[in-house]
Length: 555
Image (cartoon, rainbow, N blue to C red; front, top):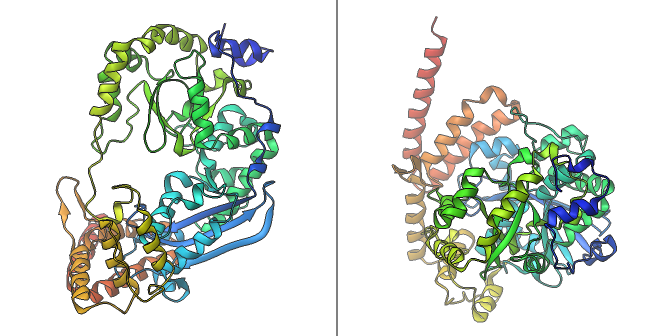
């Protein structure tokens, strides 16, 4: 019987039986390290970006760094560290620039044009049998890369799935080690006592190489050092999770356990960190999409939402997406696994070292819940309610800005892909003739590309571009979100003011960057004829700050 003191039982086979709930279906997956070596990859590109903000489509990368290793995680001696010049339509956020210690004026002299920057990164990552990875890359850096390639007419997915290429992310692997093999590291804690998975804090706590947090090259070296430490400690666990990164392997494991009694481990940042970001799931429904989606029961959710899923499956599913933007609110006993996100799905045989008491996971409770929900997993009426609710889930509102439309619309046609090849990596098309795209997104992106980089634009195009950018920079305040539009003076000043109020936490270099970012914003605004607007708003901000200062200094 699976008990709370499971970790103290001497034989894992007994533990495995209880986790599998006496499954009679024989598993076809072999777990030996020999069958899952890192040798299915020739090279690793450990990489990181620094950006002008956190919007992966509209903010811009300003620094890229990477280190190349072989499949033993040994550096080959090749590393890169270069910068990107900002185009004239971008005003960087002061909070980002002070954090990364990158002065926007310096980028004008040492930065590459964005199309050159994109080309260089593409060439680094595109080598055959290469895995591109980093820390939190799937949620952030990979999206920065995709949007960079999208804006500059490079193939978006080649470096992820062409010629044996792949991608991976160390952050969920680190969470898995915390849950399964915690003795490998010293684990920093947040103020509330929960584990802290921030790279800079892990680096400090474990003396990993990191000369400066939020510097791309320094973060890359810290990530590599972390990976080497984890693999040295538990090669079998590291290699197994790495081998399962591909969507085919994830789909195979999920398919073999679909509607069967063998529960699987799931490690995700959406799971409570108090239980090591580890939960147990049972896949029961598969939906074909861009990357297969599996809907699963989460057996460590709260008791009330678990019961609600059984009694009212439609409500139990829709409660998962209460927020207006459709993000997972975790208020459900259902979770979604997508095979194209390198989800960490773990077979029970890999959980033999877990100390369940430490994670606060009750084997008795999981077994009780499984017995309770088992009849419903094959109940056609219950499943039909789930399927109907899936189609009622809130859809993401379509974006208006073409630079946010990377996932809106069909894949590019073969003809449009050939047209992209004429443009990418160049200031002008290779044959001096701008292509005529059939995809409306590409038409607008080409219009912007020409106006950002080329001198060969018509007076009409220049006038229209100037009007677009002036409108963006002047911007407007959205009452519904209580915020200014992206890239506007209002947004910039809101961020600048918040950074200024924390000025005592900045060192001398960061303080200079704070003021230089303001001067840079003035320069960009003046170029587009919006300098009076910025000056007016800036004066209002400084007056407000002075009023607050006087109030705090009154005796």
